[in-house]
Amino acid sequence: MAAVSGGGCGFVLVAGGLGERLGYSGIKVQLPTQLTTGTTYLELYIRHILALQGSGAPLPLAIMTSGDTDAQTRALLDANANFGMRAGQVTIVRQEKVACLADNDARLAADPKDPYKLLTKPHGHGDVHYLLHSSGTLDAWLESGVQWVYFMQDTNAPSLKVLPAAIGISRRNQLDVNSVCVPRMPGEAIGGLMKLMHADGRTQTANVEYNQIDALLKATVEPRGDVADPATGRSPYPGSINQLLFALGPYAAQLHKSGGTMPEFVNPKYADASKTKFKSPTRLECMMQDYPKSLPPSARVGFSVISNTTAFSPVKTNLADARAKSAKGEPTYSAASGEADVYASACEVLAASGVRLPPPVHAIRDGVGVVDTPRVVIDPSFGPTLAAVRDKLPTPHAVSLAQGSTLVLEGDLTRVRLEALSLDGALVVRVVPGADVTIRNLRVSNKGWEFGELTGGEPEELAIRGYKLRKLQTRELIFDQPGVYVVDDGPLGLPALVNSFSLLGVAVALAAALAGMVLLRRSP
Image (tube, rainbow, N blue to C red; front, side, top):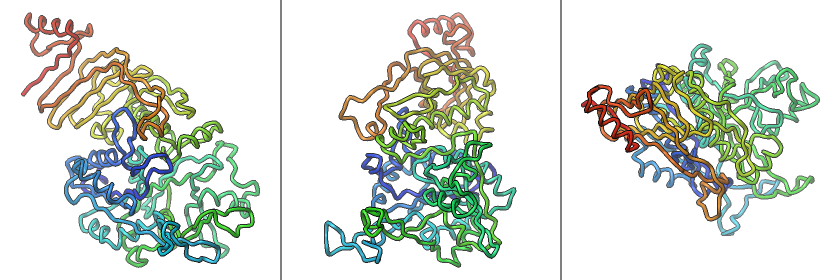
């Protein structure tokens, strides 16, 4: 944590895309990560960065937008006061578009809506390097003491979960570039990280796009192409997920030399096997993960494979395609799987802390297979690292959640401790800054919340999932004033005033129990 807090890390969010491919007309960072609280991706990322920041110096965030997303991104930040970030802590750099090519002879394509205009499309997320350099953002970060730069994609909720570990690996190995990777299945539509060797002996660790892996392997070291390692059942090449950690000093120095330009390529989609006609106009593209290709041989380039935890769950597939992928047993990377993985990721952290949880089960939601766990949503201020979470759970064995339960901990959780909880239903706890809350002993049993089928006419954020959330019964604990609070249901599940154990206190506690209330101890 010390390498992150104190202003030691800057964050870059690539947010140039709309959600049209998903069936969502807005910007992707405005999508709800899950329906339980409706927290958007942008809010989640900022809340997590603020949790990592703690009481230290501000951790800067740069957001790369496009002409399609710039105005909406700024409006989202303005409407929510930057979700708690200070003025000047967020920098927005806007990507421009480039002219499209109509055919193999690279003739420029006219806009079908206006023949006197050229058709343009985004140049690719590789522009982020040029924009960070040309805007002076990297130089400003260097002057403020930032040591690391972490790149994130727009809809991968668990992306910040692995950052402290990635920084530790980079520091230990003195890496200039550290690509965060996940285990990859053969044929999976994510790039593979490979060590490439030139005929003259030069080597390079770089990402190879998923649609090139099979042909490259067949032409070099594996005649069968993109196949599994028999020992693991997975590809021997880690999956590159565009979560990149750079040492800022060498990164800024290299961009001063190169101007931030990245290698360009053309990837046309042809109308037929003759490859003489495009399905639609294409354009020159560049990719952010190709930055290592611009480095000298002396650069230290490596990767970190994150396994046995949810670290990659992007939302990029529409519901119809997700159903088809699910039927084939492939990862769907859909709104449904993204939501389920938000809950699964939180449960992994609780389980690693010693909390008693039911095992995950497989469920189908409107034709899409997901991992089903208790629906747990905990604000990152509860603990951005496993060690911090464990500090908030002094007796984790006394905390248990039943299958189908919902646990929501919202607000400023920096001074919240959870000692004993038995949850079979839905519990929502909301805490304002300045409230010190100890959940000493809490028993919750109610009908809870459940997912239900759509009936038609639902908003896009539900339609892209194929289900809605029904809130049947909920126990809510709202701490809307600063102070010291203790929640204690007593040994029999009755509310109690432990700090005023008298006949009056017992009478008040019994009356509250009969009324179905919860009593909170508060000290000024």
